[in-house]
Amino acid sequence: MKYNIMGGLKEYIQEGLRNGISKNELREVLKNRGYSSREIDEGFGIKEVKRVPSVKPSVKKESGDALAIYKEMILNPKGVFEKYKPALGMAMGVFAIISVIALVVSLFVLKEELISLILGIYIIISLVGLGSLSGIYYLIIKYNGGNGTAKETLAVWMYSYNLTFVIFLLYYVIIDFIRIDYAIEYLLFIIPFGVALFSFYILICGLSVVHGVSKGKAFGILATPIMLVWVLIIILGSIF
Image (tube, rainbow, N blue to C red; front, side, top):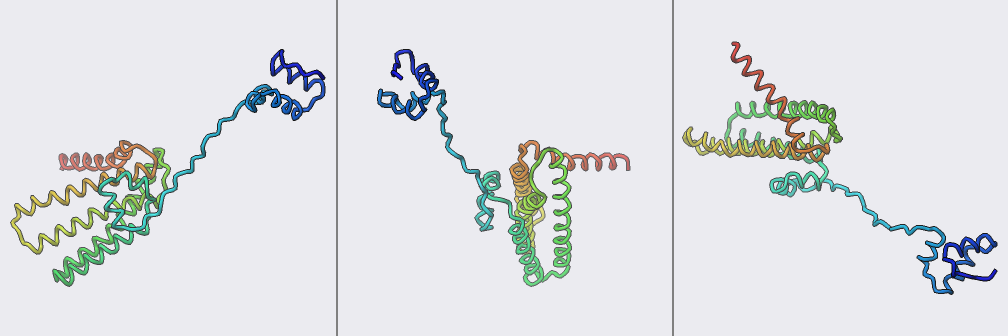
């Protein structure tokens, strides 16, 4: 066959293929005529495939150092849950350490056996209550499109509760030691109350990240039952 590329590259290739010339032979001829690989591919009808750099899925680290986690949580609550996978074991461990220290202080430092007994009962009730609440809210969030697990939900609740728990314990220990005036005592209560509100915000951030919902939706799911309880209390109070 006489090679003639004057009529156009695609037409030349089609003519060559019809005359029994292989693709490799045609490529070799075209390269010798000065055509680039890209031009030859276009002549054969091969579109250039753009390589998209592969993006590795982000894998959350396991929460390790409890103190570092809580320090970072105070500065950036949502960022912690985006960076670390909630670890129920660590959260339960922190709760156990706080509980043991509180019982030892009340029994051997404050020497208040009654307070120690009440505190022990409170710790048990807290565990049962947290487990029940997290289970209920887990079902509610799942119904509203959440995609987290029950274990992660409980871990987030424990993360949030531990912060409030330790601040309230410190508050009552300090108050018991100092024996300050009731007016100042109530004024200082602003500190643990503020921490409790911040813990609630941590809970919202954690549930939002773990379940893949907005913070507004997480807040609505958490606040709605609480508001309903308050409304019920007001109604019952007005009746009785």
